[in-house]
Picture (cartoon, rainbow, N blue to C red):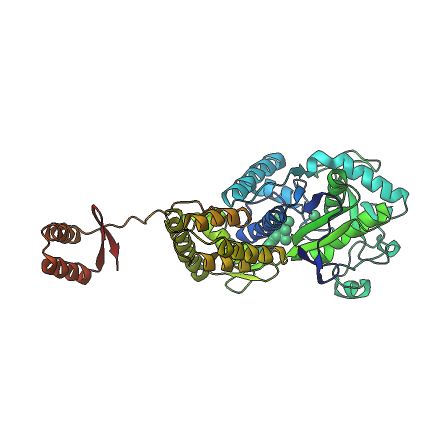
Length: 458
Ligand code: AMP
Ligand code: ZN
């Protein structure tokens, strides 16, 4: 299996550390409903997990749930996201966290995204984070200021290796920093001292406070996966700050590289631009359902673009996905009922092609191409069985029997169709054809069946 590694900027052969692949995925901050861009990130995570399993690996996956408010900006200022939601929605921060965690889990289930083996809430791991920060301070990587404990970036010379940015570039691009106690503008908070009014706070050697965001992932990945693990996933937006900071913390603590493969999912745009609340285009999976697009149609839409490419969300695209997905199910259903047998070599050919796609940096669009090609074979149960095998990677519920969309048939059309059925029983083919034409002029067509007919719109 080959995976693209952001760290080396190359597709590399995947060599796991041990039999069970260890994988960490940055999870959501639960202060709002996840939008479809967020869900693309988790469909990507799910595809990687499914692809690994298809290639024969066992997996131990960990995903965090950020239920401690980290601050609005990636820098260490701005308002706490959880506190803001709590104030605006007049609920406690814990209620906010619970409500949106549940909504997120529901979205995962509806999109056939398998839950990682460990789902870890930040609030249940404060002690792990604290002891991590204490160790970093002991090792001389953390220092105290009046408002928190900061990571001393100058002690970590390879800072920036993931994004390929050097520190000077980052500083040049940084805003004027308000915190003049920091030794370096890019130093980041490991722990913040909490003002009295801060809602979530815990005891620490430095008084009451709360953890920085980045420490959450370093502490939890170490706890569940150890000091070295195979794969770390996240969105591309995490590369320049969050993941650089995670690398700095973890490598400072361990004294060696801790993650072998860094994988990042590209962003989803809407109508060629950014998704944003002010543009009213941050749709949720439920919004799409209300507009008539099932979660599987959205999943199909996402899977058509490789995870390393930007995906532009449009309703035209969703309509095309809906048509294609419906057709896919219909074709698969024909194979389910198929009477032909497929040659073993032909089956093997498709299996090989599918495996080649999946193991080539999780190339799901290519894998879908193999599936479509395969469906052109004569209807056969062998092909149906292969579709179900492929669905272990695709997760598209390909065993669903397609539902015909119910259409309102005007009584005039129904009457003509009944007359036509009668004519056919009497073997009056001329009248039958004449009635078919009349039905067509009304915009409908009749599909004859053994014991009756179906009516469809033309
Ligand atoms: P957050 O809850 O903001 O930390 O985001 C959760 C996940 O969604 C992260 O992995 C982000 O990288 C990802 N994400 C946020 N916006 C988008 C987007 N427009 N397209 C794809 N992924 C996104
Ligand atoms: Zn993270």
